[in-house]
Image 1: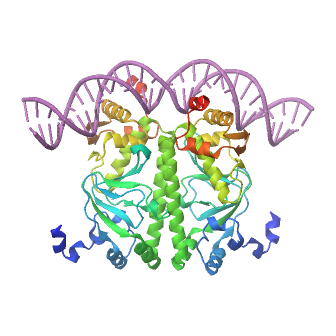
Image 2: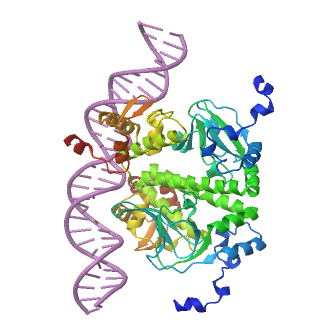
Image 3: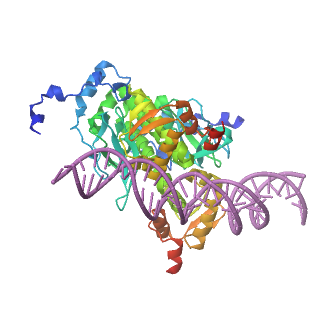
Length: 252
Length: 252
DNA sequence: GGCAAGCTTTGATCTGGATCAAGTCAAAGT
DNA sequence: ACTTTGACTTGATCCAGATCAAAGCTTGCC
């Protein structure tokens, strides 16, 4: 706590220019000069520890947040303590775009592990984006991309089987990690089986059984939260329903 | 065809100021003067007849569209002729926000009945919104609202039962029609049972059985595509899972 | 270390809704 | 009036995945 006071302003200031996830985030497409103006309004948020809330449902909407390191779970608490997981957020991803309209958060967000975040006060961002057309353009793109992502998820929940859902999920993680310069075939899942199941509309048991089966079929090696993908093409085939069924696989 | 040529420019020009759905659309929150500038870039699109395409998946993204009258179905065609219905659009609703990022439409849109639309060339809208902050603000809100809507749908597909889904759908239609000044309890569904089922992730047969059951339980009167809602509270209860189950209902 | 509290796996059973299979009905043409 | 066509309903059966039940594993905490 005291330590915060002795850190100089310069240290707290965000440096988007050097940020490893800058190319996935707001600065994309901005001139260096404009990135400087953006840096002036971005704040470094206090680091979160596992289980800490970034915001809760019902909170007034003030800022967008960008994950710098770690990961965040976003979920809608339902009556009777149940919850529905809406998404997992990796470094470079922006959280809060869904709250702009209602001016309040309809869901809660909490850290899955120790995480660092940037905070972007939305009124100032909105103001800045009237002055920097390329920032406005990037905002439109980010909002639109978020819609596409949700639509993708809708497709998954609406017609894919359990097998297809989990394969899609694992591949999606793989691709997102790759974009961040991490291994697409060897990674750590920061969320529990329960959370994965909840996110995909499946029971924990189903998730567990599928991981076991994928491993038996030589698609991946699973050791608790550590995943090693072996057969990306096989997973891709499963993910879009063109995969061999269990029986067919055994016969070939 | 010839008739189009003798209509004066003034007739073709869009008059957002007098539009009955203006308060649901882009002009919301704009000064009369700015609405005038918006009108200059909005075009009246050629009316569509049942089955006509507004755009197809893969089409280059050029414009947003607003339904003025009628209704439009948006869907993702899948391999082998199958399709996944992504939404139904009523007057005042904007179509195409999901295509901004990729600069191409990932889904197709076709008219469910004779429909009139406005076309808003996106590059010009983007330009105009850098000049009119309240227009930019409205765009952010609309995009954000779209994300919320999709999230809502995600919740529905992820954990609601068939019974809850259809009740939610009917109530959602009711509320949207009410906002447009139409009866919230007596309306016509322009889409088929098949399309409703597809949209909700249910089989046609399930939709049909549920409509029958709702009617038996005195919640509504269904006559082909015409729906009359009788017990809004009962439907609301069903829709969020707090409703009595069939058995409980009979015992009370 | 050792115990408690979660997670995760695995097995057995159950069920909501899909699928299959006939009809029924309404609108449009002949 | 009679066929056609496509949308809708109704009934019978089936199955993927939920739910129930019971262990194994980890991790953390005293």
